[in-house]
Structures are given as structure tokens and as C-alpha cells.
Image 1 (cartoon, one colour):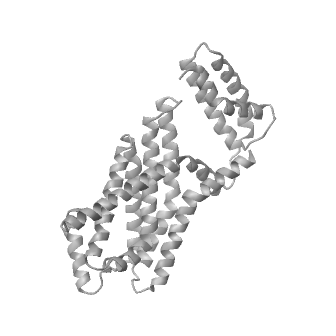
Image 2: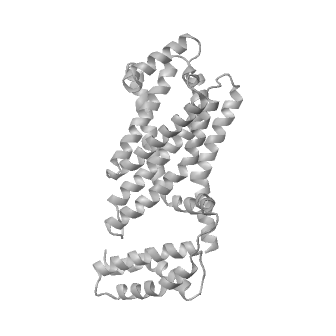
Length: 321
């Protein structure tokens, strides 16, 4: 990138930072700290590619002037955990809506692939789900309790086991992103095919509605946050593939940090999904309206927190600035 293009791309950010230093405007201490990090990154870039240019001199002066001010003004809030979920994470996640959409589309596509493959050859279900699970489910269907698998284990044991397993799958989806995002997409493919095969199996037995009203009680949140964990994996992988104006190492560090923030945001939802699967899903006798209410409420919460709310926080931030 030519120096002129680099300046044009970042001048508004630098001007904002300079205005803060000269007290022409004010911003939150945390945002000032983030801006300072970006300025120092830009300074490193300028020193590397334009060592004799005026840009490096300007940025060096800006960074030096800012150092003392930042460490005088930045304070950790007493309610750090609350502000993380209500402000810091949503504002950060707003910039990763594209990755979330890509992950969702990949997962959805392979869900259709799983259902289509099962429709072409019903034995495909056994290949994906395993003979043990299929045979057990067939036995439950014969007994008139197709969803009996959710009643076998103790509630607490099931809650703990399911929650830990879901977090494990999510961590795989995130960490495999280090394989240039391909690893994450592979995990999405695996889980999508499994879901599609699972749904078609019950459709083939004439039990699609009964199975859906049961599994989506917990599955709405469970599947959604696995997709969100896949988004974190893409953030990690793309940080390696597309460093932009940062060094590849610095971009990688930033992508790990943001990916971990996304993963932290999913933990409460995994706990809720585990609770629902361990304590609620087993009650297959519940009325349809209650099951539908739980499913739609879960979906609304996920859509609001990960799509609508980040947009609102971002717009509020712009108005405050």
C-alpha cells in the first residue's frame, strides 16, 4: 500500500485521536485505549514500510503524547463482567456479522446435504449417527416413546455432561480456525450433516413434528451457539489469512482475542441449553404450545443478542461520539 493511500485510509481515526489529546472532544477511556493500540500498530506499519516518511514521524509524536494520558484516564469498571456482555462484546461483535452469516450458510447448506443424502440412502443415517443410536431409537419408537433417549440419564448428570460436551464441540469449532478457517468449516460441515441426517431419520418414520418439538427445545440455543463458535473460528482463521494493515503476528493476536471474547459470550447460552436438555426436554408430554413458546423465545433471544443488539450498541456509540 502506498503511503498516501495508507494516510487516506486512517486519517479520520488519527484526527479523532488528536482531537481527544487536545481536549477538543471526549471519548470513553476504554475506547481511547483501543485507539492508542491502533495508533501504535499503525506506527509500526509506517516504520516498516515508510521509514523515511512524514507519517511515521507524525504517528510517533501522536503515540508519545497519548501514553501518559491513557494510563491516567483508563479505569476498570466495578461491573466488568456486566459491561462485557452489555457493551464491550456487542460492540466488538458488530464487526463480525459477515463471518456469522458465512458460518450460518455453510452449516445450513450441509444440513440440507445430510437430509438429501439420507433421503437417497437411509443407511446413510447409520453411517453418520452410528448403529447403536439408530437401533436404540428404533426400539424407543416401537415402545411408543421415540424421544425416550432424553429420559434415560439422571437430570443433573445429563445437564453437566451435555453442557461440557457442547462446550467441547464449540472449542473445536473455534480452535480449528487456526487451520486457515478450513478446520472450522469442516466442523460446521460435520455438525450440519449430522443434524440433517437426524431430522430426516425422524421424517422417514413419520415423526418429524414430534421429534422437532422435542429436540428444538434445547437445540435452538445449542445449535445456534455452535454456529456462533464457528464464527469465532472464522475470526481466528481470517486474522491469519487477511492481516490488513497489521503485521501477520499482530493480526493473529487480535483475532485470538476477539475469538475468545465470542467464545466467552456463548458460555451462558451453553449452560441454558444444557439445563433445558437435562431438565426440560425429557418432558415429552408437555403441550405443544409450551414447547413452541420455549423454542421461539430461545430463537428470539439469540437473534436479538447476536444480531439486533450489536447494531443498537454500535449506533448508540456513534451518537455518543
